[in-house]
Image (cartoon, rainbow, N blue to C red):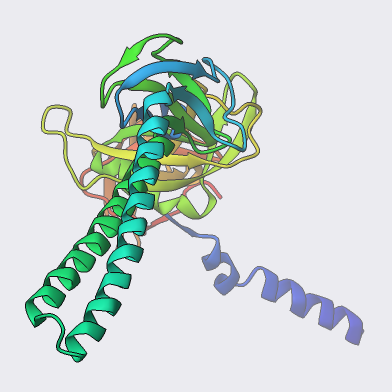
Length: 328
C-alpha cells in the first residue's frame, strides 16, 4: 500500500501545473539566411623585380612557373666594364698608398731638418699638406671601390627563395635601362582570397572568425581560414568593404585561381522570426499566435524551417518574446 501512494505522488508531480507550464510557452527567435559569396585565390605577395643598373642581359635563370632556388638567382647582366672599373680603382688606391709612404718619409726628414733649423717651417707644412692630400685621395678611392663593388653585385637580380615566377619580361642579349622589369614573382606558400563585403556581411564574418572555414567546390573540401586584413576604405560605387581572407596551408594545391565559397549567416530583414510550429493557430486562412499577456497577433506564414520551426513575419514582434503552445 505505501508503495502505491509513492507512485501516485510521483504521477501527480509529473502532471502538475508547474511542469505543464514549462512546456506551455515558446520563444520566438531571429531568422537567418545563408549567403554564399565566391572569390578566387591569389598569391600572398607579388613583386616585379627590376634592374638597378643599365646593361645587356647575360643570363636568365628562370622561366614562367619555375620556383626560385635557395640562391635566389633570377638574371645577371654583363658586368665586364664594372670589373674593369674596379680594377682601375684598385690601381689608383695602390698609387695613393705609394704617395702616402713617400710623403710620410718626407715629413719625417723635414721635421728633423726643421729641428736643426736647416730649412724653414713652411717647407715642412707643404710636405704635411701633400701627405694629408694623399691620404684623402686613398680614402676617396676606397669609397669609390665600395660603390663599384656594390654596383657589381646589383648586376645580378635576386628574388626570395621559394617564390614562383609569374611573368618573365627579358631574354639574353637584351639591353636594359635602369628600372626595366625583369620578372614578376609571387609568394604562393600562403594564399589570399579577396572579398567585397557589405557592412552586415562584414559583421557576420567577424562573428564567425574563431571557427571560420571556406569551401572549395572543385575539391569538395572545407579549409580553415582567417581574416588577414580589412580595408579602412569604403567603395562609394559598390558600397562594399575590401576584406582579404588568408587560407590555411593544407590546401590541395598552392596556386592562384582556386574557386572559394564563403558561407555567411545573415539575419533576415523585415521582421522575420522563427517559432515552434505548435504555437501557430491557423484560422480561416490566417495564422495567429498568442502572447503571455493574452494578446493575439496575426502573422504572415513564410514557410517551414529546420527542427520543427516555422518562419513568420510581423512588425509587432521582437526576438525573445514568449508565446503560447496551442497544439502541445
